[in-house]
Image (cartoon, rainbow over all chains, first blue to last red; front, top):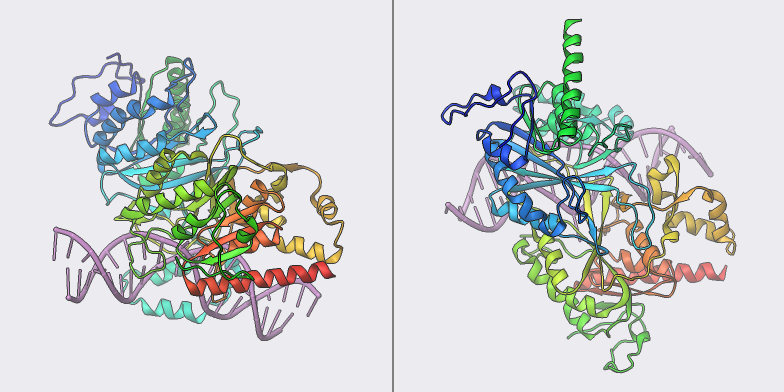
Length: 301
Length: 301
DNA sequence: GTTCCGCATGAATCGATAG
DNA sequence: ACTATCGATTCATGCGGAA
C-alpha cells in the first residue's frame, strides 16, 4: 500500500485497534487506491460520506473508467468498507447516474442499490439533482439529460439530520396568507398544546422559511479549471449542512475535483479525501490549502 | 369476461385474428379488469401507452391496493400484454414512484424495470416529473417527495419521436415550459381565429425555440372538484405530442381520473381506456363525452 | 373586467397506541 | 413481537367569490 499524506504527517502509523488516533485521519487528502486506503481507516468514525464516483464507461483509457457491466462488482467491496467506517447514525450520499449503453439506460445503478441492500445498507431516499444547465446536445431518440440521482444510504433507521439548516424562503403565495391566518390554521394551532419551548412562536416566524423537498435545483459549475467539477459546491454543501454539524468528519473516497473537501473545510467540518490520480491529488492539496489559508486569515482579522 | 363499451357499440364481436377490425377498439373506455381486457385486444395496434397504475399500497380496501412485495408479480403479466398490443415503433410511458416502507424506499420499481427487461422491453429513458406542489408534511428523517419517475420502454431501438412538437422557448420563460403552451391557451387561440392556429403560436413564441430536457416541471392538479386527477393534463399531453401524430392510437390501461383519454381526444388522437371501477368508469365516460361535445361545437363555429 | 383573497385539497409518512 | 389504525404534521395550487 502506497500512502502519501498531505500535511505534516507523512507516514501513517499502525492504527491502534482499541483506540485509534482519529486526529491522524482528519483533514487529510490521501493519494492511493480507494479500496486500499479505506481498509486502513478505523471503523465508525465518519459522520457523512458524499461522493461522486467515476462514471461507468466502456472506453478503456478514461480516468477511472469502469465498464458498465463490471460496475457493480467493482463498487461493492468499496461500499462494504464505506459501511464499516461510517458511524451508525451517519449517512452516505452517492451521486450517480446510469449511462446510455446501446440506446438503453444501463441497469448498473438499479443493481447496485439492490446489492448494497444485501450488504445491510438501508436505501433511505433518492434525492434528485436537477441540473439547470445541462450539457448541450441533440439526439434523434432522446433529449438532454438534466438530472442525476443522489442516493441516500444509512446504517440504521435513526440517523442525524439537521433539517433547519437548509430551510428555504417561502413561495410568493405566502405573502397573502401571512396577512390573515385562516380559521383552519388557527384551529390547528390551537389543537397542539403543551409544547414547552414556544413552538407556536417558532411556527409564526417559520412562515417565511419552509423545509425543502427532495429535489435540488442547481446549475453545474462551468469553471475553467483544468479538471471539470463533478458537481457544484452547493451539492455537497447542502448535504453537509443537512447531515453534519461543525467538527464532524466528512469522507469523500473519490476526491476528483476536490469539491467535497473544500466545502467541508469552508463549513468548519473535518474531512478525509482519497484520490488515486497524482495530478488530481496535487490540485486538491493546493485548493484545500488555499481555503485553509484564507480561513486562517479571516480568523486573524 | 364482463365488457361494457362506452359508445355506440355495446358488445364486442369476436375479433378476427387475421384482420382485426380496429375501428371496434378506437375511442372506447372499457369497464373491466385490465389484464382481461388487454388479452382481447389485437396485437401491434397501439402507438403509445401512457399510464399511471395504482401505486403499491399495503392498505387492502383502497382502490387498486397491491402490496409492495407483490407489486412486480402483479404487474408483469400486464406489461407482457402491453408489449404485445404495442406497435414495434411505439412507446410505453409508465408513471410510477416507490413508496416508503419501514423508513426505506421500497425496491419494487427497480425490480420491475429489471424484470421487464427480461420480458424483452428496452428501458430507453427515465424522465423526471418534478411536482411543483407536492404533498405537505414534515418528518424527522425525510423531506417531502417532489418527484416521480416516467419510465420509457420500447420494443425496439427505433421508435417514433416527434421532438419538434414539444420545443420550448429559451430564457427565463423556459422555467415554466409547458405552462406557456398549455391546452387552455391553445383552445383560446383556436376559438378566436380557427385556421391560422399554428402560425399565431409561432408568432408569439416563435423565435428561440429549443428542445426540452428529460425533466418536466408540472404542478399536480388538485381541484376543488369531487374527482381530482392523478397527474396534470400536461403530462400525458407532452408525451402524446412527443410520441404520436394525429390519428394515432393511445392506450391507458389504468384510466383512473381519465386524464390521458381526454387529452388524447383534445389532441385529435384515438384512444383506448380500461377502468375496473364502475364509478370511475362513469365519470370517465362523462368527461370524454363533454370533450367530444365541445370539440364538435368548436368545429362548427 | 381585473385583481385579490379565502379555502379545500392533495399517489404522504411517522410514531404512538391498540389488538 | 408483529400488524392495524389513528392523529399530527405541512405547503403549493386553482377555483370561486368579493373588492
